[in-house]
Image 1 (tube, rainbow, N blue to C red):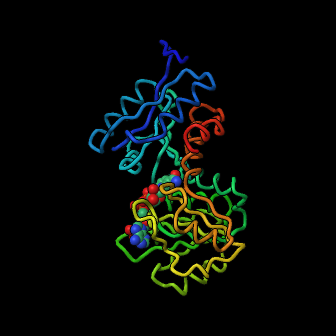
Image 2: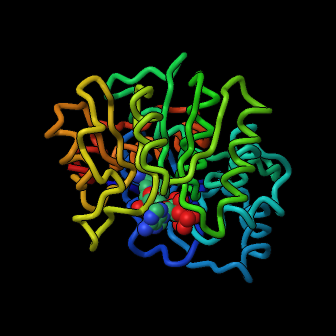
Image 3: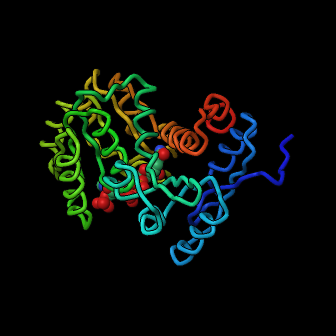
Length: 287
Ligand code: NAP
């Protein structure tokens, strides 16, 4: 039985909406299991209240907090420092409070790479194609580059975010040992060539997400060869159209649910210095 005491510390999730989040369940079960005297709550906070809420979290000696949409970029204005990955991504999803000093991290990319490793993909020296250049794609690309991927092909449509995607490829190439480039998603021949050279193909767009579960950016599955690993960061549905295409092509594939679990595991480690009981959390909330 968990007891809140005069020593109990708190932290939590800020964003809007937040009520649907799995994070409170995941972190509170972990605190309870490891006997850590802390609680994690969800706070519905918009951009206009962010500065004030961060100041309160700093002053009340919280252990830290997570951020979700739409606060991951704006929060950087209120922090004392950010990690290299968070700086390159340009977004923070985890803040650690050490005696009033706030440091920002981005654990989404770590979550993605940990899930890839859990499925046998070791980034060192590999060539990877990532579809998309939004928030989740950015985090995955930066962490893949920091963890040793040699060549990264980012593929996005020529939309209003094309320049941001160009800037991401440029930052990765200049600030990490990985060579990154950008290709137009409408150029199917070029995309086939990139996939043909890659060890891993990642869908980091929202194409295929519920309710549009019969959509995939891979219009001809012949491009999927058996020794290509395929990842979809979408977790709803758990098995996307792209994953079904990959299975039919006999490729190894994995979805986005473990990325969600492992980003939480990394945040927990940053706050507590301890390993989250992931198997228990997985069994209770992710199966
Ligand atoms: P985001 O920042 O809005 O980015 C969405 C990306 O999808 C952009 O690159 C966008 O391209 C692209 N896109 C959307 N519709 C498209 C279409 N019809 N054709 C081609 N490209 C399209 O969103 P996000 O936060 O990165 O989330 C993306 C997906 O990842 C969502 O399904 C989300 O649930 C999932 N996600 C999973 C995790 C996890 O832990 N597994 C974490 C975060 C997000 P434009 O820039 O051209 O619009």
